[in-house]
Amino acid sequence: MERTLCIIKPDAVKKKVQGNIIQMLLDAGFTIRAMKLIQLTKEQAQKFYEVHKERPFYNDLVEYMTSGPVIPIALEKENAVPDYRELIGATDPAEAKEGTVRKKYATSKAENAVHGSDSVENGKIEVGFFFKEEELV
Ligand code: CMP
Image (cartoon, protein in one colour):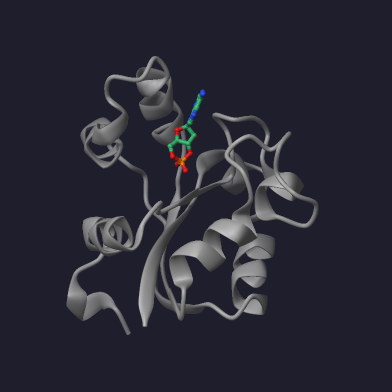
């Protein structure tokens, strides 16, 4: 079974659409193996997005991801990584297909409601960033 990490981001939590997003995940056939509500520290956000540290949006991304609580969710499903990316839609909500999470709930390219792992390998790494193996049920 493949694993991927969803993070419901601060803009979606502030809009109180986290319940709708979780329902979309369940309706799409994902199993939730672990989930928590947390406030990221600056250090955690910097580390999680380290791969983007040379990008011009890095500092704003870290600031935004620490602007309020987030909900990391460890998801499992066959083909979890591509199926989840299809469900959430393009990074930029203006380019996201109708019916996707970002089309429905994202505000902008930066405040885009949810994070998604971009590969099977990163799915494993990112689930491990937030959850110990024994926390996955
Ligand atoms: P995410 O899937 O969490 O992965 C990296 C994040 O960086 C992305 O979603 C966006 O929140 C943000 N991001 C990516 N590209 C841009 C951009 N061009 N401008 C601002 N933020 C971006």
